[in-house]
Image 1 (cartoon, rainbow, N blue to C red):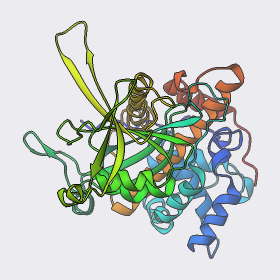
Image 2: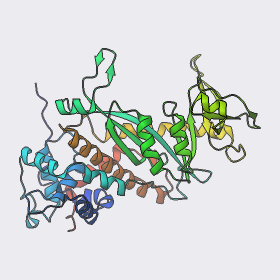
Image 3: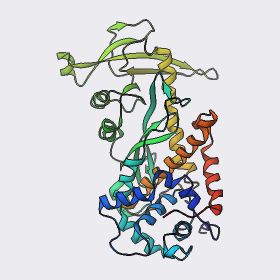
Image 4: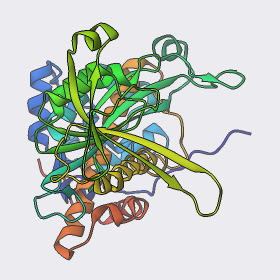
Length: 400
């Protein structure tokens, strides 16, 4: 039996979502029109669905995952007074017309908007976002199920499973997250077969800054990536595998020690390496006999400026990024676990729209939290999404 699709309330106006500080606060119409002109996607003639409306529609899909496409469009268009001479609800389009409008828009516009919009949110006095003057960040990746269509399968590929392959193709999403706000400040999208390390080598050098401290798990270390990330001036605290050869060269007062990483055995022989500080420790679960051993490497070589105990505790802030992916994949998208777009181009468009919508909500949450002295990553993301949805019927018109 087919599952019934959820209809949205009649006469809904999405302008609160747009004009009162959620979507338009990060993507004002002027910015959208500038990017449309830059990418050559500005409407050359009057259309039923102008390109700016389609941009807002793509972002609105993130909030109404279970609603039919036509219903989401109706909600968007009733909030956009500059459609149909300001007559709310005058625009109606079939699923085919919506698909054509999205295809005309493509993914480049949403990508360029994300490059301009996604950024760190924490101010210097923001609680929970900094460590000794450094903005705490984390990098990680996740797989996103996409519609099981031939084009998606060919482009993205399937991850392996215990019994053959996964039921759906997957896109790989890499994110750089500000731990104190849960804002995704940079991202990359690729076929699943592409490794997270290869994606990070392309993404991080352009996005890291000297005021950042970046956490990463043991699947990210490679000499090339470490070297590229260090060159940005950012401070790094990464977990590495115990098999990485890191002999003690100098034992430090806090129990950590200095060592050197190399790109190859030839470089080791020639002593062409990069100095690192190593922190080894074990966590014991009092409820079980299991012990977890950790080995961290950092380019902060002075133990006085960042003691080993503090860095070990800080590393576990990396789990904040797991919460961000949960927000992005589960709470923002409700029960819809598979992206609905049926071509690789539209999958990427949809993902950039999701990233922009997530950022808009996280920005709203930080603006609500900080004046009250609260840590925004301790507020309920799910509750924020529900509040935004409830506010839609009371919305005012979108400014032209």
